[in-house]
Length: 609
Ligand SMILES: Nc1ncnc2c1ncn2[C@@H]1O[C@H](COP(=O)(O)OP(=O)(O)OP(=O)(O)O)[C@@H](O)[C@H]1O
Ligand SMILES: [Mg+2]
Image 1 (cartoon, rainbow, N blue to C red):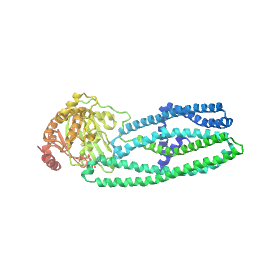
Image 2 (cartoon, rainbow, N blue to C red; image 1 turned 60 degrees about the vertical axis):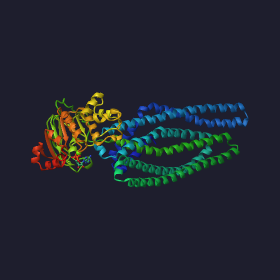
Image 3 (tube, helix red, strand yellow; image 1 turned 90 degrees about the vertical axis):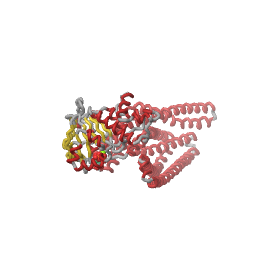
Image 4 (tube, rainbow, N blue to C red; image 1 turned 180 degrees about the vertical axis):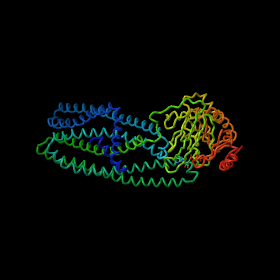
């Protein structure tokens, strides 16, 4: 059975079980096999060299018993030292060939595994990194990570270690069988009657062993997903004193993995004990039958010895072939999970003929034209409903509204993280869905509600906004965003390492770093999702000045929680339940909009400094 066929079958069964859609899936399934081979193609040289090495090592192994036969039958029986030396010399030569070819085979086949898998990793990572948030809304991070690590490792083991063994096994099987017949037809015919039922028994045992061990691996994988989740939220766990709850949950899963391991251990123990017993029973059987032939002078002792060795080689070859079938299955499973990531598509894609944006003068004009939207994770809940909004180039627009009104969602749509379900968003006369994705994101930049800080230095965190920025440019942006002052107090200044997710910073500091990064990017459209209470009065005032300064030259949308922001805006819109319910200036809205008045009283008037 060819490799491609086996992988196909495995893939096919899996898909059939999952969806029951044979035809469409069949195409996908062929694609999966093609993909796997496309990753092998660049390494043809490695495949050929390891095959050649394998031919040599197999030939050397198979020739050794012939040397032993000569040694026993000719040298020993004639007591000739010259013949003994000759036979030994021959075998030493074979051992040297064997050593060299095993070395070469290991190097080439293992390197093949490593290199191919590195390519898959890079390709999958690149692919998913370009997928829109829709994809991540529906997946667990731990699961994606495990695909890129565990599944990739399975492929590496299969391609780098298992496949060479099976090829060697097949070579050994055919050549060995030929040699068995050549050595003794009678013994071999008897063997061929006895072997199949024995094979069936050991295959069955092997199958149950592998089923249990896969089950056990799955349980262990569940464990790491749990750890990933609770460790990344360890502060929440502790704040809610849920340590014991998490410990118990983990312990339950550990128990399950122990149960799975028990079954696996039992079946493995049985498999090995039966296999070894069968192997030795085989040896004894051959010795018995062959021994009587030797006694009857129908066979020499050397031939029997050589024969016995071939039987053992053959047993080993059969073993690695049968084991390979299951490892192929797990490799196919792993490949499937990886290619499932590679196949993942989101609706937000680069248009076929992307339009570029014209040179921005002073910000960009933005039009929301009857935009309706629901998040893909919750398709039936309309978050924006027939929303119309016209923002002039260079305008500063403040957006206010109760929590959940859809304010941040407007920003997500402007960055084209998601596409509207109905209506369209037009940026400087071009529909967002028709514009080059990278161009949109070069032109529109956001300071998100939850600021992201990477596990690197202050300098690099800010420079993320413009990778080719000089240190001076970074410091300039840092000064505007009120980062400079607090960074001065750090021992290592701008080189200070900020810890994973920026744990060494306060909420307000993180926010200011995020603002500096966006200022450095110098976008045409600036989106600011203000977090409420992260800043003290003094830095707030300074940031406000900075933002007003920065806002002058571009279109700025601010989700506002502060009086200073709404007052400095050209216009304020009030959002509620996915619609714009009022718009105007602060003073007018206080008069005309009941919702604005109540929000203002709760949010900015109370915190007015
Ligand atoms: N990724 C998502 N998947 C599904 N639903 C989402 C997603 N993000 C937000 N929502 C839902 O969309 C609605 C609007 O969210 P949005 O973040 O736009 O509110 P907001 O006006 O910014 O609120 P806040 O002032 O609290 O930040 C909420 O009801 C929220 O549950
Ligand atoms: Mg929000």
